[in-house]
Length: 285
Image (cartoon, rainbow, N blue to C red):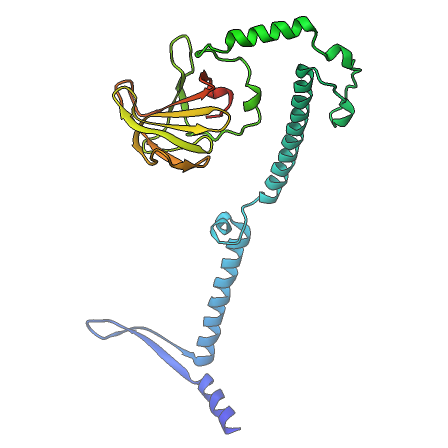
């Protein structure tokens, strides 16, 4: 009992706090509190601070800066993006099915549209009508032979070998000069911020990494399907001849080298079977 009494006596013990003038030591103010009152007030202040902190986190945007808390409306946005992604994937599958169907039609093969899910409009296709006649075959061969050795030709549509290839954009920026066979501009000029990294558009092997007077630091990469990509006017080349690269690998830094360059940009070219093709038909810059 004595211990309890002594503890209670300690809590009841009053302390006097006096405010004195620093120069005259004259008492300005004073008040007395017991240990129980001091502890009670400290706990009340801590409880008030905890309550205010909880309210700030729960009802203000400050909670976005705390790790583990998601921004407002995140769930709603995620659901919207998920639905949009599903819709885009469905459209992509339909387009792929249509592309396969069209390729078979152009090749004169039999097409069974019941195999495809996009059958809103049911068409009766006569397989005999899809077969190329002898005159059509002769005309097609003549056109292909005529264009076979035209180095500077650009097909209006993607070659069949390139339609299913996913190209990696070498750089994201604004196209300042487009592909133009007539002006002997066999690629696109892409303007981007200084020191921007340039990436390989497809996996392949570096076959050229040098400097020329007109195009400055230039790199060329040999890819599959008889494709070659050129990257010109760089400030630095990060790969050497013979090195293997993957799509998206950083190979150079954008620059303004060479006499044909008037500002920092990338001149990007794509060549397929010795013909210059428009990169914008295959890549979104």
